[in-house]
Image 1 (tube, rainbow, N blue to C red):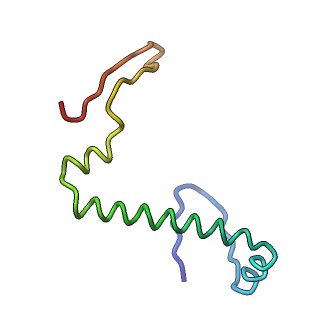
Image 2 (cartoon, one colour; image 1 turned 90 degrees about the vertical axis):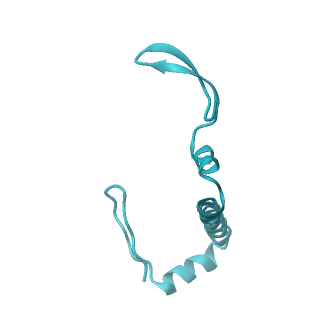
Length: 88
């Protein structure tokens, strides 16, 4: 049994095991897609667990922060530039 949490309104449908297996037999390329999605999620989870347990506080902050460097864009309709440094 799986639990689902939606971040916005959505419509869910149940697909039984027999229907799922029949669909997979007709469209085996879906297995490759699901394999890639699950592998990516597992990789992200492994990286997060490793970071939480083995990295220093500074390294965890650097991993979570936007890249340091020069930022240019528009802020309130005004062209803006900024230089960012995580650890000056």
